Length: 272
Image 1 (cartoon, helix red, strand yellow):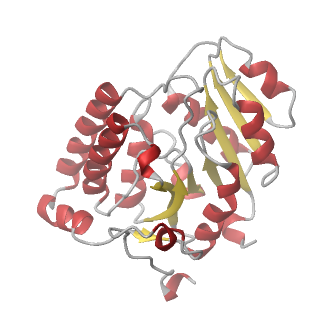
Image 2 (image 1 turned 180 degrees about the horizontal axis):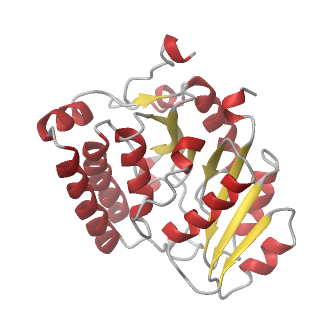
């Protein structure tokens, strides 16, 4: 493993995930032994289940939102000297088996945020959620000045420099947007997408993400950042007039035979 990701840490924020968290954590532990779970005020058996496994549990006594849960996990990861953080949700939407693929992309692009982008089987995503995600990704791409196919996916790799942006003032789901924009604009990081399957389970609890409320908050925040950085037209063309960077050495997008599949790039020679 390259020095850039020699000590990865997985951070999983969760709230009332007793149905899925055991399966998720056992899958994660098969790939990474350094796991931090942040229980954001669960009222079910989530904390008890997590406590029975060889992971670090951080508990919030009451719900503080996803942003604060991630902050708690990031600060703990920084304190233990992790080179970067892999994030994923605790509800089973993200497959732990995809974590090695994100780390492979991180090795190819050591100065990049890597996103597990739900580009495969998008027909499984509820229509309203898909439209909200597409709109948010359209706007966040503009904010980043780079195309981001799935800016709402919580399965990501953040290099340590991005994790150190932990004190950004954005709250709840807006925090992940703030991280992407700041990493891209302020740190000059590339954003690389790794195609993953779209996974929704009818038996799972309803999402804590509220499309209208949270997309509105994300949109207002992103508009503010677009105005802050200026070069509004140039940023739009850079984010919507160029293809995203996608790491897909296995050709999963091609196998899906999507006529609109984005270009699949290899790492720039300067970063190999």
